[in-house]
Length: 80
Image (cartoon, rainbow, N blue to C red):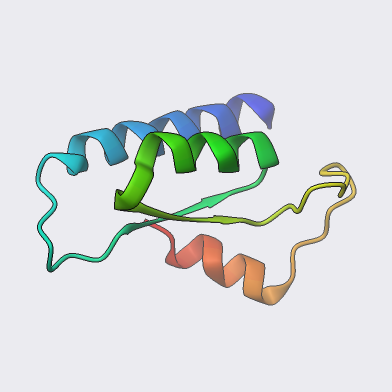
């Protein structure tokens, strides 16, 4: 699971970087959802103004026992 999430996040970062050069003022920011507080901060730093990051797992919550809500699942599905 950890390897899958790492690959998923790295793929999202590559997408952010590739898309960054083609953004226009009329486009909305890339929607990114993360499942780890460290990845949330990393995505915000790398993406800057070109991304809107939503961290699903909040600070202080054990990710091993985290149970996502329906809204969390919807955010993941709707993310770019």
